[in-house]
Amino acid sequence: MNTYAIVGAGGFGREVLPLVREKLGVLSEEKFQIVFVDDGSQAAEINGVAVMTTAEFNALSSGEKFFNIAIGNSRIRERIAAEMISSGALPFTIHSINNSVSLACNVIGEGAILCPFTTITSNTKIGKYFHANLYSYVAHDCTIGDFVTFAPSVKCNGNVTIEDHAYIGTGAIIKQGTPEKPIVIGEGAVVGMGAVVTKSVAPGTVVVGNPAKPLRKGLGS
Image (tube, rainbow, N blue to C red; front, side, top):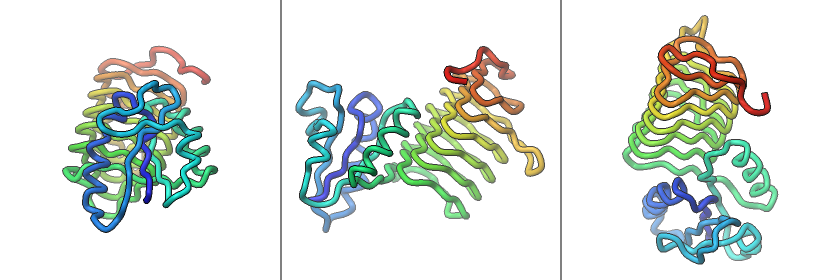
């Protein structure tokens, strides 16, 4: 029996559980179980799903093991992904059946979570372990790095580059760039809730407001 693990049994993990059930429900020929993996949880079961420690998950010996990471902190996602892969587990993508993902030359990396009503249009390149929360939008010709997080209702217009570990807050809007001069959100930058980004954001910078302006340097910058 194959095992599909949602790493992180917090709020986001519980939100994506129905999407995993939905995804695996179409695999009628496959025998599988879904579990949460959460070393900090004291519960044996959450929302009808068993909760395991990482050690317990790693000790499973029957079937293949798959994982996705429903944890907002991108640096923790990166560490857990490396640990899971080194233990022999494989990443899988979580997405809702009511997403609108065009087939027009998009490339989406492994381990993504695409929540309901996510839209990805054409000619985008998205890296590993991308989180796109409810009602998020990625337009044409965007490039998004690894471990990027979109909170709900982010609107990323065309010709935007978002580098690794950036966080885009709820309701933020990123203005369209041009092929010659894309708007760039630097590595580890944070775009605040409701911000309207009209120009590039330096790595590690926190921007807020309309138009978005720097608040402070991000941690570790």
